[in-house]
Image (cartoon, rainbow, N blue to C red; front, side, top):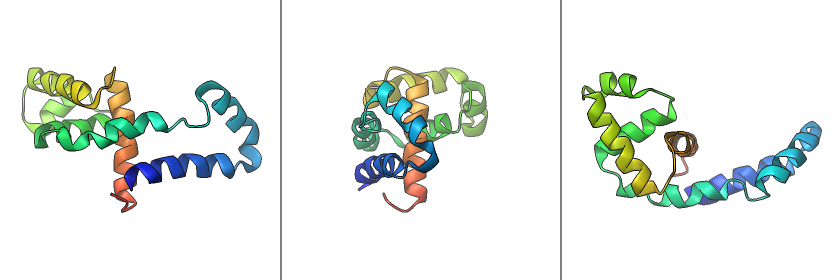
Length: 115
């Protein structure tokens, strides 16, 4: 259901162009009509994360640095770096930026009650 919501939201934005039609055409020319599809695969794998990796994942979505995450979770920065490495591998992502974006999309959808 989360995947459907992500895709549905993306297409809803596309369909509700209104004044932003020109912006949407520019965006879709760069990323294609199915721009949210890249989020679907990592979201399916979130269940593979350990509880602590999940905590780090969510904090990545808030844009926290390793230092801020370590302070928030009472672990060392080295431990946070290890968690980030495992998160990227498990979700098959290339960067912490991608992980943060997926985390934001995930938390947004969960907040809407769609998980």
